[in-house]
Image (tube, rainbow, N blue to C red; front, side, top):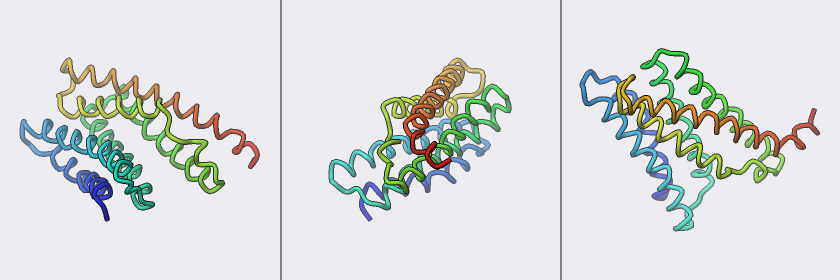
Length: 182
């Protein structure tokens, strides 16, 4: 167990806390939930940075890091779907969650074939993740209908479009291997 792996585990522990903070019946519950989400987002960057910097990458960390990220994002999106109760927020949320499931399965399948590098994270994926985290932070922190929350919705849509674009890129890169197995 090393510091990068502990940071990843902390993100998983943050998930039930995020849900509890989100539902607290206080005016400060939304900013508190957003702060926890921001802290989780920072640990996502920090654990990868430290693992590379200190040469502490482990198979456990390589497995758990993307799982922790996807769980935190999916839970935040589920909370926001309930808060907004509107198709215009539900659609980009489902696009993001659906893409994560497809790409996770694709990466696992490609890894089994020894071709995981074919679907490695691209700069579009990193930009998508950054915008997604900003959008979720804004949507968690501010009440629906406020100007900053509207900016969060717009950012979520941009993130969803980048999500689709990156998924298409990953599928195109993997297509020669997928089509051979049909």
